Image (cartoon, rainbow, N blue to C red):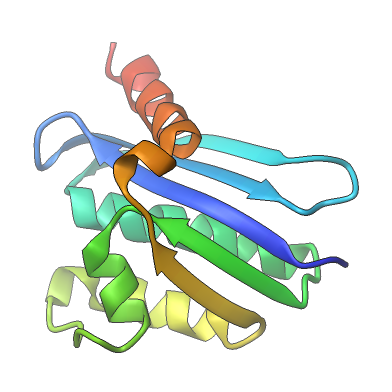
Length: 133
């Protein structure tokens, strides 16, 4: 399995509010994987972690060796790189699960500006708007 690259985003209408995630994974032989999923009533940071977890679970299920993730969430990126400690009880189990999944891969994560994460954002917005109607 070649190296995978994922763009992830989570969003909500209101904070907290109806929430969705968007994930775009490239590097697969069959072409890019696009995921848009409703995740219920959450806050923005939970949605961002849920998007990361979806990308990690997908990479592990594909038996990928390596995954690099791009996210526009500075909180998620800095917590996953260890720059920030995750002290939030609300985020701790999501953070722990993502770290555990990441250990199964050669994992890295980088922050990108929102303008560089347009497709994942569009998928997250479409998932939450579809369900919120």
